[in-house]
Image 1 (cartoon, rainbow, N blue to C red):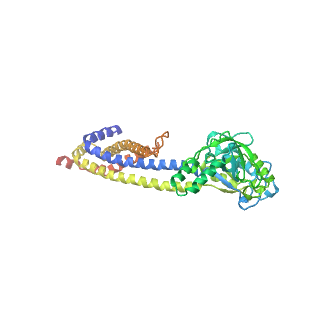
Image 2 (image 1 turned 30 degrees about the vertical axis):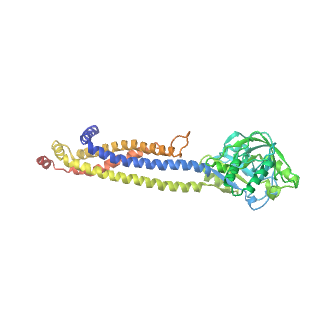
Image 3 (image 1 turned 45 degrees about the horizontal axis):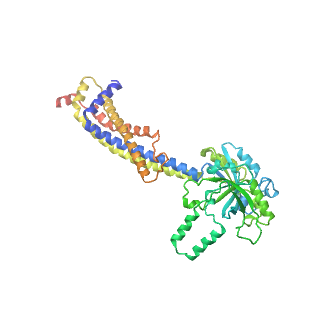
Length: 468
C-alpha cells in the first residue's frame, strides 16, 4: 500500500466517527495552542525585555571610568581639554587621547564618546529668568550615536553652542517671581492645593531653542563677588528618555557642550579665581568617563578585553542581560511543561478513542488479514490515522492560538498597556513557533496511536470474523 492509500483509508475512518474525531482534535488543539501561546509569551517577553535592557542598561556599551578622578589625582589636559598631554597624566591608568584613538580603531567598535562632568551651573535669559543644569563636556556629534534623540535642533559646529535636556527648560523664574513664590509657600506651608499648583508651575517649559543664555557658576543673586558669564546659544533640545515619567523630567537637568567650550569656561573660571565644585582646574580637564558602543552584544566581551589591555577600568551591564536570559529560559520551560501536560491529557483521549476504534473495527481488520494485509500495513494504517488526527488538532491549535493572542493584545490595548500608534500588539507569534506547535501535535497523535496500532495488528483474523 502506498501512502496515498493509507491517507484515504484513514480519512474515511475519521470522517465516519465525526464526534470522536472532533473531540480528539479539540484536545490536541488545546494542547498545541497552549504550547504556541507559551512559547509566544516567552519570545515576546524576551524581545521586549531585551529591547528595554538595551535602551536602559545599554548592554552594547562599555563604560570606562577615570580612576584618577575618583582618587582625587590630577590627570592633566592638552590643548583639546582632555587627559593626555600634561606631565601629571603619567599614570598608566589615565585616559589619554592616544588610548581613545586606539579604542576607535578596534574591530566591532561603532562609536566612542568622552564625557567630562563639570558640575552644576546656573544660566540666565535676557528677560531675567534663571535656571540651572549639570554641565557636561562631550563630542556633541556622538550624542545621537549613543541613543539620544532631539525634539528640536541638533549639534552645531558653531562655537559657544549648547544642547540641553528637556528638564533644563522647566521651572525658570525671574528674581521677582521667585520671591513671590517663596513668600506664598512660607505663608501657606500646609496648603496642599497651593503646593500642587507650584509643582505644576515648575513643569512648564520655557522655549529655549535658538535662545542665547549666559552660563555662570554662582547663582546670579550672589553679588558677593564678580562672576564670569559665558554667553552660549541653545542649538538643540533633547527628547526625554523612553520610560521617564513627566514628573521626573523636571529633575532631568543636563546640558552638553564641546570640549573646546569647556576649556574656555575652565580658563575663565581660573582667571576669576573660581573652580567648579572647589576642585583644582587641572582636575577638571580630565575625562570623567568614556562610553564605547560595539556593533553587537556578542562582541562586547572581546572588545572589553582589548580595552583592559590598555590598563583602563571598564564595566558593562552584560551580566544583567545574562541573568534575565536565564530567568526567561526557566519561564519558557514552565510554559512548555504546561503545554506538554495538556497534550499528555489529550493523548489519553486519543489512546482511548483509537482503542475503542480497534475493538469496533476488528471484523474489518480480520477481513483485511484474510485478504492478505500484513501486520505492518495494519499498524501503518492506524498510525497514519492518528497522525492525521494530530494534524487536524495542530491546525485547529494554530487558529486557536491566534485567537488567544489577539484577545490578550485587545485586553492590553483596552487597559492602556499598548499606546495608539504602536503595532497594536505586545504578544506576537514568531514564525518558528508555529512549526514547533504543529510538530508536538502530530507527534502526540503518532505516539498515541502506537498502542492501538499494535493491538490492531495482533487481532486474530478468523476469531474476529466468527464473532461477527
